Amino acid sequence: MRHSWSFALRSALTWSPPAWIRPRAKAWFLAQLDEAGRRRFEHLEQGADTHHWPERCDEQAWRESAYVLDVLRRYAPAELPDGHALDVGSKNGCYAPGLYAARAVPWTLVEVDAHRRYWWGSTRRAHGEAMVRGLGGSTFVAGDVRALTGRFTLVTWFLPFLTAVPLEAWGLPAALLQPRALLEHVLGLVVPGGALLIVNQGEQEAALQAQLLDGLGVHSTALGAVTSALSPFKKPRFGFLVRT
Image (cartoon, rainbow, N blue to C red; front, side, top):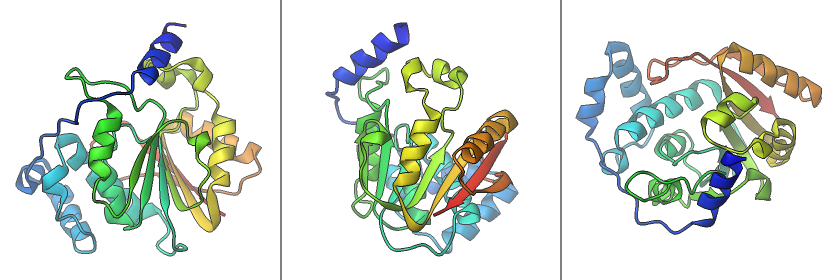
């Protein structure tokens, strides 16, 4: 009940001051990487437009954008129909530069808890809107993905909520734990010939994701461990690819 009230309150208080972003130089980011990470990022840069990253990427954005760029290059299909792309559960949009560098089309980023505030007063939504600005018509949407009605050629979904534990940890109401309904809706947003890339955290969640996909009769490819020399995360991640 406490999480339901706090979520309802912050969702109602939507005004936000501008985002406060402290960009970091590329040299700073490279200095944080080991040799394998630097080699991988330099390889990714050869086929991606990252020139604007130092102007908009703080520490979190550098780390997560580089990781997302690597993951999409490794695991998302290279050949897809033309059209917009979607990221579900985008937090504060910090990795939007990585999404756009991987696939330079308009991205829609959607986050249900977008009005969560930082200690200085601005919201995830304000941060997300700042991060997508100038990225080829990309947008950041505050709300439930089930309110979206567009169609997308590529959908990415990092760490969908499959159990109550992470939902509780993020202070979200139990009513938002609807993995089957959410997956069914998201699958309906993918155009024929498109793809849905799901990344789960830990083997237990990967097993639950496989059961959910099988239960819906969805043919998917288990990608196994999703690895990256640029990963800033400690826990192992596992992926699934659905082609429509």
